[in-house]
Each structure stands twice: as C-alpha cells, then as structure tokens.
Length: 432
Ligand code: 4AD
Ligand code: MG
Image (cartoon, rainbow, N blue to C red):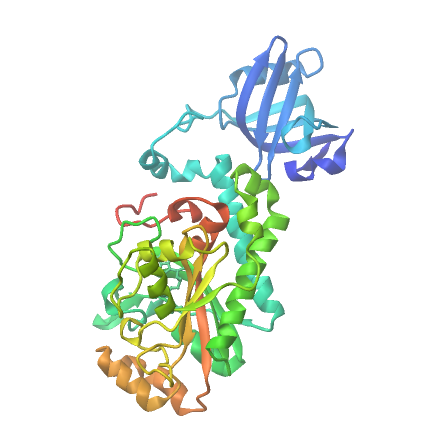
C-alpha cells in the first residue's frame, strides 16, 4: 500500500509512491499517454498515465472517466517545474469511485445566473475555490490577531427581541407564545455587555439585513467580525481598525499567494495597504466630493457612489470619522465638541470597494441613551438590559464591525460579494 496523501503535501514524497483521492478536473490524450488533471480540494496535480507502464485496468479506466468523476489514483511523485504546482504523478494504478454524469459546468463561459443555480458545484472551480480559501484564511487570521491582543471570543445570539441598526431592515420570525423574534443585524449590543464583563471581546457570526438592495455590495446574510473594548474611545478603534486591516491584507499576501495568483490579483495594490491610512472627517469628505463636482447635502449618509469616488482618491483604505449624528444608529455617542456629529468611523477599502468597517464610540450616559431610544422610536422594554450597562459601572467604550465578504471581495479583487461567501443570500435568490 502506498502512502495516502493530499496534493498540497506531495512535495514531501518526490520519488515515492503515493495515493491521492479526488476528482477528475480535466483530461487529454496523446497517443498512448493520458494526462489527467486531478483535484482533491488542496490543489491540482497533473497525472500521467502511460499505457505501457500502468496497470491495464488503470489505463482502461481513463477512457471512461468523465469530468468530476471521483477516483483514487496511485503513482510516483516527480518534481517538474513546468507542471502546475511543480509536481507530477507518474500513474501506476487508478480506481474510479463514481463515474460522474455529464457535468453541467464546463470551461466555457456560463451566465452568472446559471452558475449561481449551480453554486453547489461552482464551488469546485479554481477561481471560486481560491476566493473561499482566502475567506477561510481571513477569518482565521482575524481571530488569531484578536486572540493575541487579549480579546475574548463572545458569541452573540442570532434570534433577538429588537432592532439594532434601524427597524427597516429586520427579518422577522415567530418566536414562542406569540412573541416576535428578529434575526440579528449585528452582535454589537451583546458585545458591549461582553466588554463590560471581559474588557475586550469580539463576536463573529452571520448577521442579517432585509435590505431590498440589488447592489454588488449587499447580501441579506453576511458575516461580521465585531471587536468591542471597554475603556476605549474613538481614537483607540481607529488604530485597531488600521492595524487589523493591514494585518489581514499583508498576511494574505504572504500566506495565500497561490490563490492570489489564480485570481490574477494586482499585488501592488495590496502591497500599498500599510499604515498610516489617511484620516478625514465627513466634512472633509464633502469638500473632496465638491472638488469632484458632486454636491452632497450635509447630513445625508454617503451611498456606494460617493464611497467609491472618495476611496479612489487614495492608494490605501481611508478612514472617515464624525458623520452627522442624525443619520446614524441610536447607540453612537455624539461629539462633546460638536454635538451634531457622531464619534463614529467608516473605513473605505481602496480601489473603490467602499465601506468594509463601520463603528463608533458608544453612548455611555444613561439619560442621553434613553433619550436616543425615544428619538429612534425603539421599545424601551427590549432595551432595559442594554440600559443596565449604563446603570452599573458605565465606562467609555467603542467598537466596530468588519464585513467579512466586503473584505474578502476587496482582497480578492472580485466584483461582487456573492462570490465571497459559499452560499450567497440575495434579494432574488435563496437557492441552493
Ligand atoms: O456599518 P454597519 O451597519 O455597522 C454595524 O452593524 C455596527 N453595529 C458594527 C459595530 O460597531 N459593531 O456594518 C458593519 C459592516 C459594514 O462596514 C460592511 O462591511 C458590512 O458590515 N455590511 C454588509 N456586508 C454585506 N452586506 C450587507 N448588506 C452589509 N451591511 C453591512
Ligand atoms: Mg455602515
């Protein structure tokens, strides 16, 4: 029996026999030789089956193998600089496990709607595979980063009794005994309770927005990483955001270069993501827009268009602070110097990718917070526990949410968020 291994490990077995279990990606023939591209989830390896060298059954099996047939293949590993991945398998044995039916996705161009209908299979193609590997890596790198800095992972509930980011984008569902529940828009409010218990926490999980939005930047279900810190002011989270984003981009550059190559990502754009990120206020952003011939009324939040124009002025992410309080969520603290501004931040990714982070210092005064709840027409009963955090040892505290799909789409250089999550939930799509 030869050693069972995976394609990403074959480099350790040059000159030896190994067995790989995977799927047929592609095949071509040349006389008495068959070239099989095998994928196993960790990589792709070219496997050469020579009629005179392989077992007769093995050679015959190559005839009936269709694209995506599952198989077990054994052979000798050879280093070959020209081969994709740098190694080749000289096949001696091959066993088909299942002969796949006509595979719907071929190398030819398919429409996006067709591909999304076949998302469960589309995941196997090299570009999708690269994006989702980077996603996995980004989530892991972010957690490692925060864990090292002393943050505690603090899971927030998904079924919640009230809105956090505005009542217009809530998914409602029935809870027990006639009560309504809402899918969480953000774990933040719970993270604040966590920060008062642990000092520094982060939540990581799916969040939901019932926005009837068809843009490339909106999903109905997306993942958010939300660090929250006690004894922290706006300035503290600006530094954390800058450092975290830099860390994510630079570690993908170092550790996921193969995937970036598959995606044909312009690396110079990512290399320039280093501190300091430019920091401007909302008012300065308005001036910048005016210079570009866009007059944006004071008080209105920026849309995707404004975000793109602003971020295109810089070669790295831009930090925008002090938006008008009016447009912002109820929990944001107003600037003591200019009470009509919020102590808040948006970080816009470079290359026009728009907002990847939104955050703020939180209102820590009981009376002011109560007033804000009233102004926002939020039901006080549902927020009594949240008000408690201001009754019992309130301190300045701040945090932000980093959108995982926005971050991944930007790092990968892909156009649409739908490819940055395994199964996107979109306005007109919940299948598969
Ligand atoms: O700016 P948002 O709405 O902030 C919050 O939810 C805060 N409670 C976070 C906090 O302070 N803890 O969302 C934060 C980020 C955005 O910057 C964006 O990256 C992402 O979440 N996001 C979305 N991603 C995909 N689809 C959507 N519909 C998104 N809405 C927000
Ligand atoms: Mg936001």
